Amino acid sequence: MTTFRGYERENGRVGTRNHVLIIPLDDLSNSVTMAVENNIYGTRAIPHPYGRLQFGRDLDLTFKTLSGMGRNPNVASAVVVGIEDQWTQKIADSIAETGKRVEAVSIEGNGDLKTIEKASRIARDMVKESSDKRRKEFDVSNLVVSTKCGESDTTSGLASNPTVGVVFDRLVDEGATVIFGETSELTGAESYVARKCATPELRQKFQKIFDDYQKDVTKEGADLLGSQPTKGNIKGGLSTIEEKAYGNIQKAGTKPILGVLDYAEEPKVKGLNYMNTSSAAAEAVTLFSAAGAVVHLFTTGQGNIVGNPIEPVVKTTANPKTYKSMTEHFDLDLSGLLNFEYDLKEAGNRLYNVMVKTASGTLTANEILKHYEFAITKLYISA
Amino acid sequence: MVNKFLIHAKEDYVGVATDDIRKDETVEGTYMDTNQKTSLKAIEDVSLGHKIALRDIKKGEKIIEYGEPVGQATKDIKKGEHVHVHNIKTMRW
Image 1 (cartoon, rainbow over the protein chains, first blue to last red):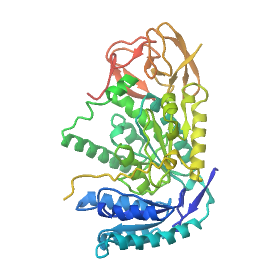
Image 2 (cartoon, rainbow over the protein chains, first blue to last red):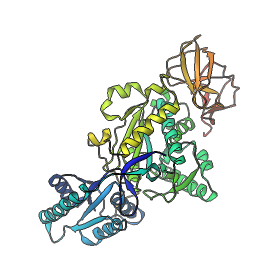
Image 3 (cartoon, rainbow over the protein chains, first blue to last red):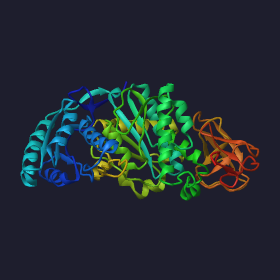
Image 4 (cartoon, rainbow over the protein chains, first blue to last red):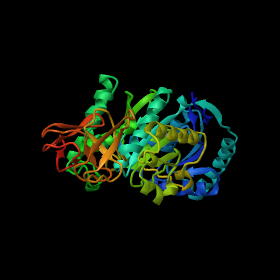
């Protein structure tokens, strides 16, 4: 059984990073969080444009995403900053359920400057405490690993996506939790995904998510179906939407789906999980990180460079031109698979090893280049 | 013989070119699931990333790739032919 060196959290979950996160509840609180990040070494702010006058499912998802980021085991402790205290406290309470230290500060009645001082002092103590934590050896079954592809081309379906599939199968065999998503990109292979669901209940849940998405597309009068595959896809050799979808789904591997999750929902079972996500890279990775994923495997064809503030994003491509022209963004070159230098199994070993190293603390290209995209999925207009 | 295409699964009717394949070239392919080799003669050019027929396919027949149907033939396709939007289409619409 493989092991990695991670940070044990109060609730028994294991993180691969040790961040002190400064979370703005709303757009008005971004300035304070960025000032704290600037003042205090080792902190990370996650500014975003939402959190005011949202309602219903959309409001729930924004708050679930914010608290999910704080709950993620890659976060040692968190400061939540909000314009008013009630909602700020709600997010802090949700994070506190994990047992980690969290503090809420609000701006109304204090102003930015006093709030910055208060939050900075708290963050200063949190960094001191978190830096005292040490990595320990853990079985890989403690990992929650997510995957997504972006700017895909034929090398994705042919090489890099099947390589992730090999790693996902191995992680499932070793007792870990793995998550894939991208509801829109499954179009054409949705019946295959439904067949992979382990029980009729899961199948129904998946089918409803997929049908609801199709209804949303129709409601907006858009015809995603008629535009797929894109002209670029066709030039690259993709002929049908089914073919594109099967190329995408290779990332999920061959195991049965044991969990079907809504946006940002934390997985309840180990093994392969599907989560409803957008196929936009930053939104999807944000949802996975808010659900508690601690390492991400990202494949690209033409060169998507997405990162995340708390979940390291391992980036790989099998396109030799992309690797050569954008080397600084990559953690692994898989183009050797297309040159017949090694086979799929060996490609899987290579990606698995990079994943384990990353989980143990080796920085990814996205972390070094400060690609910290944080994109909340907005479901509909605010009031 | 040069290895110039990959096949996702043993059930597949098509391989995917990993390099540009020229008309009349005899090329070798590798099955990704079993590492087994196969070879065939291309009867037209097939560019990198495009598909080549591993067998004769009748008009209306489903195209199997990744071990799953990904489209159907809109005309008869000969072994070694380029397989793309001119001779297959989605089963959706």
